[in-house]
Length: 491
Ligand code: GLC
Image: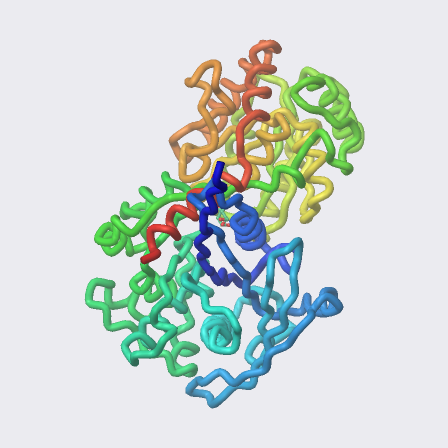
């Protein structure tokens, strides 16, 4: 039989973000910015209609560079034209697990500050310049992206810069663009002066509200060919005044270009069967081992050593978004049932204090740990019974997916990615968690009571844990969806 040779079609994508694991990770964006390009690059052409995604990542050179400098292989030096003059810029390149990465360094990207500071002008200048530099870089590579994929307000402006070039008849204008929204409320407010100083004209798009024409995220949205929110529910929510941050009407006009794609988790990194940080490793086949992890946690935190007391946990940023105040209110209302809770995280000082106050009110039940501790968080996922995630809004959310993979049942608000990734208890045998609607401590407390009731029925709880652990949260699914989106932009 003749061998049929199928030609693979390549799509070149430049993915830009201001944080990326393992270089620097502050929040969820950092996880996505490495894991998604990596997954896209490793898709098998057969799974994507004989396409190959040549995706490369570009990030700013923050102070992390020293740790990684040994791996930098090449450097390209060029000037970036701005209203502040031609700014000398260097791009280094490296590779992590086969993913090519460019790192942009310049005096406008200071290395002595954290990724995000409290100074809007400083951040604006850094990120908007970075966006200009990524576009300038393209002219100096032996490689032309078909698609520029940007993320959040920090890099959102690049599609707009591409449009400006298009109107000047420049070749980079052929590039298409995708903008992923990880967190809509961060519009880049306070960066107007930086935009001006760099010589970027404000948008004149009359469909955008007037105030929005001066802000990076809305300007970027108006120029992007495709807009992605990090879950289908969030993609719908941002069309409403409650979640739309004043852009709901504009986004509704762009509805046909907007979609929602849930993020994944690194299922190798997050695997209770191989996790070296936890004492007793387990899978659905020896789930009873989990008890040992709970015992160790209770012992270490000097909580009563009782396997039947439900152990609740919060792991994350102590912010208004994450609803830590609802947890504090809700736990105060939990009467008549035994419970224990571990609260781990850092964030707004006022909320940290309230969480500590809760521990002093409930010394037998609550342990509050004000720190970021990813190793300890693994032991909590592996030992706690339930994860509390009453977020006011949650574009996608990561902790609930990790928790399910570890058999720690999420109790979460029915919003954004939480709604899309957790199957509520009403789904009976396919349930993987508990969802509630109302944004109140009382609603959370009621749902915890419901969960505690279910928890008493051990075989039922076991089924729920097994279903949760079997859910497919791999990046593969998300990567397939992004590929379809990229393919739609071709030709
Ligand atoms: C932001 C969102 C979070 C999402 C993450 C990655 O941090 O708040 O919900 O999971 O971005 O997309």
